[in-house]
Length: 287
Image (cartoon, rainbow, N blue to C red; front, side):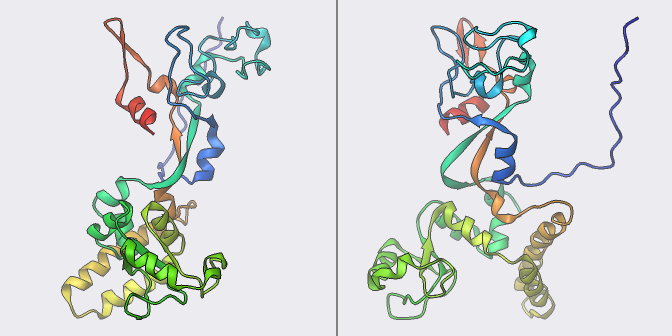
């Protein structure tokens, strides 16, 4: 008599969802996707290092590597020395994930377009100014150092600079200023784009920010500014609370590595003899 499998799902009280760090994405990834290609239209086999790569996601046939050198279950677990594909079941293509290393960091739209604006509230920036950073319209002063403004005034943290102002400031600085360590208080640091947001978020002290916002909320006379401080405090406290259970850092809202979901969850769909790409696959191809 066949033994029955125990399919009972273990009981649990809750599911926690948090931000994924670049390191955690790389830890579960089976390899880097470096090509936008999917399948070879002559051989109908997945392209190597592409979005359906067998070396990364597993074989398309049970217990058979891509080149056919190893076939059948007796070779289970062997990684082919010719094509690099592990001999295993094809169902692993529903489980294995890959990754794409980005040339520059990007800001996830969920965190600066949705309400509340998480990145904006953490940094104390309105949406319009945040857009100016993300879309490379303005430089932002991260560390003033010894630099002076266009009219000789002292620069402040989070000052916005046009490209002309930024170039004028960098030209006025000593030549060795750019070679100083980032931790040197004399070094001038200003950036734009998601790379700028990444550094600003990395420098945040959530405990100190929480204290400052509580003080503002308790002592502010303006109702509007008090409400704004409470809204920001809510986002800050959400991050602090989540860190009690697992590591959850604000800078992880800026992506340096993108996970690529298993190919069987984003298949190519045949349509009247042609091939239809699903929206999810198109997004990965564009990236």
